[in-house]
Image (cartoon, rainbow, N blue to C red; front, side, top):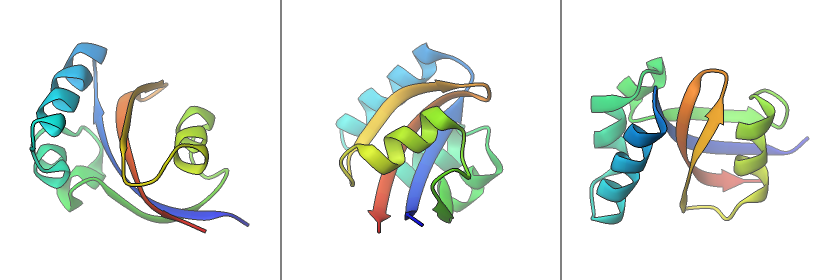
Length: 92
């Protein structure tokens, strides 16, 4: 079964996600923005979701984590929870 480690930031609006992505592109640290802005409890850990298997997350999230390049920020990605910025750290 495919496994991955990823960070994410969850916010309510696409506009907020776009603003955070711009800050990341400007050199802001993912973990700092996750701690300050993420609505997910993982925000306290810098957005870390730890290790998980394909199928444990909602489909749109899984697709990014398991199919897009690692170590890049992807999104905004919309799910039933809100808007995510996702950074896959490792996959195997």
